[in-house]
Image (tube, helix red, strand yellow):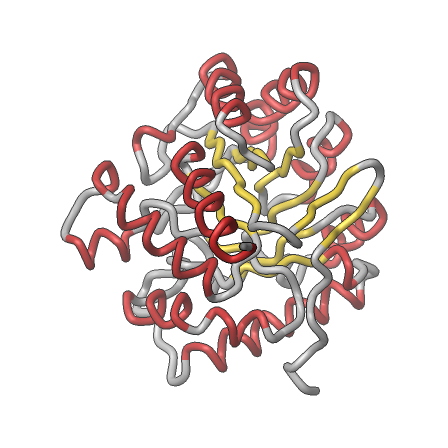
Length: 286
C-alpha cells in the first residue's frame, strides 16, 4: 500500500465544532492534572489550579485545551482508571460550564475517554495511537469525533530503552500508516484523523531533529499534523538547559515545524505560542 495520500482537508467539522487550519496553525494548551509530569511548572494537581490555568490559556488565545491525568514522560508510572477519572473529570465538567473552548481528552484508556466525552470533552488525543485497542477505536468511531493518533514504540515505561531506527522517517511513516489503517478499519473516518509523530516517545535526539526537519514528508501521509515539542528533553540536550529554560528552544522548534507543515502545536506556554503563530501567519498570508 502506498504511503502517499491526498492532501489533508484544511477543516475538520463535527457536531457544532470546527478545527480550521486554512489560515493558521492552531494552538493546543497542555493541562496536566498530574503530580509527576516532566515539566514541574505544568503540574496542576488540583481542580482549582487546573481551571485557573485553563482560563489563562483561553484568555491568551488557545484554540484547544488538552486535559490529561496521567504522565507519559519516560519511565512514568501508570495510574488506575479510577485515579485518572478522579483527576480529569471534575476539571472537564467545570471547564465545560465556564467555556465553549474545544476540550481534548489526553488518555490511553477507553473508559477515561468515554466518561470525558460524556462530560463535555470534544475530541481524543491518543498517545497510544490506539495500538491493538479495537474497543477504544470503535468507541471513538461511534462518537464521530476527531482523533489524534500518536506514534510511540513501546510504552512510556519502556520507550526510551535504547530506541533505534535504521531510517527514522520511513519507519515512522510506515508505523503511523498502520495506526491509521487500524483506525479506519474500526470505523473512524479519514476526515476525523490527525497524526502526531511523537517527538520524544521512543526517539533519540537525532530522531527528534530528523522528524522536525522532515515533517513535510510525514505530512505527505495526507492527514493534519500535530507536533508536540514543548520544553522536551531533546531541546535540553541541544541547549544544555533544564525544562524551565527551554522556552526559546521550544518557540524555535515549533516555528520550524510550522514551516514544515504542522497544523497544531501542543504547548505549555500558550501566550508565546499564539504570538509566534500570528507572526508566521501574517508573513505567509500577506
